[in-house]
Amino acid sequence: MKGNRLIVIPLFAALLLLPFKGIQAAVIMFITVSAGLMLISFLRKYRIPEGFNKIKAGLQIITENSSIKNSIIPLMMIAFLVSPIFLKDYYLDVLIISGIYILLALGLNIIVGFAGLLNLGFAAYYAIGAYAYAIANTKFGLGFWPSLPLSAMFAAIAGLIVAVPALRLRGDYLAIVTLGFGEIVRLVLNNWDSLTNGPNGITEIAPPSLFGFSLGKLQHYYYIVFVFVLLSVFIIRRVELSRIGRAWKAIRENEIAASSTGINATKYKLYAFIFGTFWAGIAGILFAAKMRFVSPESFTFMESVLMLSMVILGGIGNIYGVVAGAFILALLPEVLRGVHDYRMLILGIGLVLLMLFRPQGLWGGHYRRNKKCSS
Image (cartoon, rainbow, N blue to C red; front, side, top):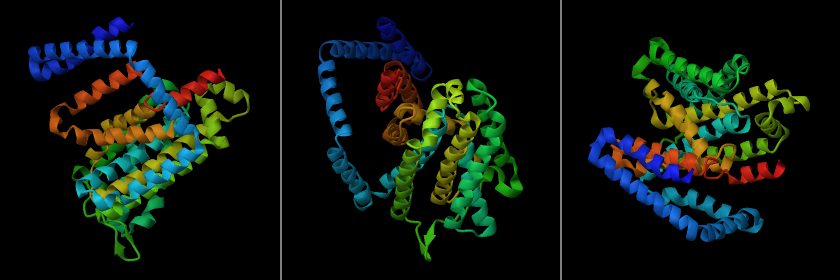
């Protein structure tokens, strides 16, 4: 198997580069990736395991030692709180977008990671939350804070409407239904000119305000998103440890066994859809208020794929891993801005390598160990 990887991965990378740069560049890519994998294999065999085990042991001490954890978390909080003072507007803008994607990934993780229901149309609920605020603000004059529960409620209701008929299906069939709903929402937004202004989108959306004071500056908006991210992590973590969270995980592992113990699988799946899409609606209103413009092009199928990639990268079912995965994939396009034409190529190769060498995700090891021990 390892020998096959040394051939298949370089060949895959070379074939991806071939249409862009030609045969010569593809051959160089093949040789470079092959040499790199052989070097990694050599180091892994003779050097890396000892060092990796030390790092792993150190991380385990940090995660299990409450005193260390309690000292690290406040330091991270302080770093994020004071960062707007030192960072330029460009970096603040990137952090704000990262925070919105973290909310989306956390919401999708409830459906995919906790309940085990594959959803390929999550951008639809994101769009519903954004357009709910855009329409309420531009046509009815509602501000950000009154529209906040409205956007979350509309997204949650949409999740309920889709879940009721779709939960009769499983696996790939459920994924196809959610994919179809995502495309339906995008096409409706694109063609309902009288309400959504069609492909031109909705402009002049008002930023948040508090007691008559506008919160439209990036520094203000950064703190709003930061508070919502903290709130979402706290609430979702509490729900995960509750009876509902345990029921979701039981259904994910074995729905028949969960039903035999008295768990109403259909009811808890509905809870997962409603709760997950609720956070998508909040992310949508934050996005609309930040951009002050929404259009159907912001909520395509590729957005749903990106959100799912964030969950997979961080570790399905792990809240902190999903946060890390969302932050990395939101930050990666900006890091690779110098090679704009090849960003998706690099991202694709990276995800393939992740699935081959660490399919549980960057932060998924803890869950897999627990699962292995329980079995």
